[in-house]
Length: 79
Image (cartoon, rainbow, N blue to C red; front, side, top):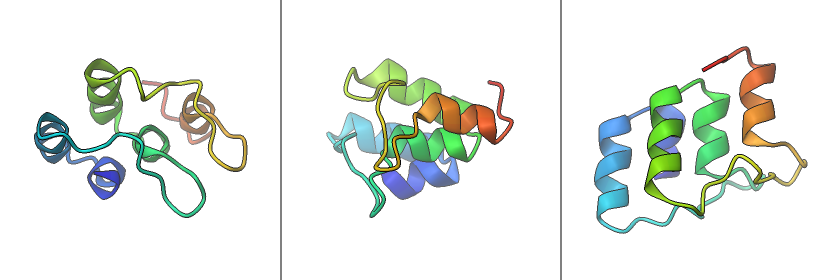
């Protein structure tokens, strides 16, 4: 799920979430699926994650204390 979010594969993300994939997955730096999608500018994946589950949150920090929303803004992804 994490790699699909990072790559922006909205159909794969949807498929995996519908089949029970955990949205709590993180990489080695503590970045979750929402941060992965936001940092890569994949607004459609971010919207899907936020609609699908309450576990994904814009208030969730990674290990560097960065928020998904802040990461997206810093990378100039206004959506």
